[in-house]
Image (cartoon, rainbow, N blue to C red; front, side):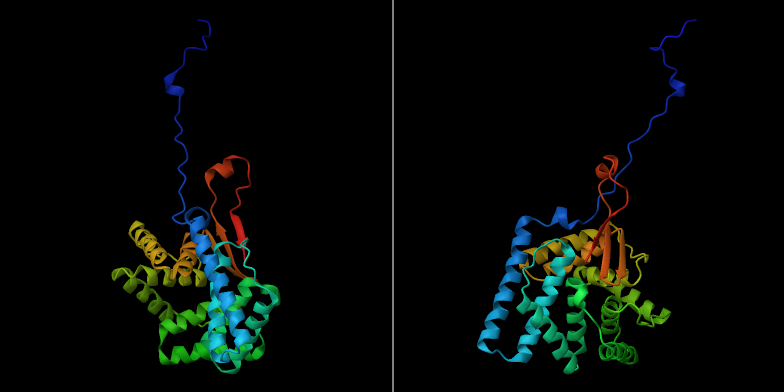
Length: 282
């Protein structure tokens, strides 16, 4: 019998299902609108102008330093969400940031010191340098919280210290980790999704491979909270940063701060682009 190409043996056929692409539960490039960015950048520009006015009017320095830490944290959050964003931080702003870092260290305000230090390192790691006084005092502050069993403060301080100086031993033993996990479950049980997201993101920074139990219920609660913050115009940037960290394929602490690897859409991989995840370092 001659060969007929139109005759096909159906027993030799195999059916390949298209590979399922898991969509990121959150992607700043997809989920933050132009309106979101305009509001965030307007807020930053307003704070920069307020600081400029405060310098000119001779505002009380202590109040000014508190304001400057807030500005630094806002700028840091925007930089994390989009490392390419133009923040228009002029030399006067950088000067005040560095001055604030030294002032709060001199005053022994270690919470503000840690917040300002982590902001400067992430915004511009090339100008950040931690001296031995700051290093020893942060270690002492961690130990003080451990002895006092103020575990939430200890945990937040530990995350900041890890990013500021990854060589400092945090002494995160099993007991400390258990209390950290317990707090996450309390937030989950009480549906405190704002606190849950921040706590979970910090846990991922300290242990990138930890299982946080981020199921559909958790992500729905976290995403709903983002919408609430968007309407209230408060905590929006901070919550979005936590969501980016939680959605990331990989989060690493580096000498320059943090490195976040986000998974890319399958279409980019099929187009011939390298399959290595997109790396955004800030």
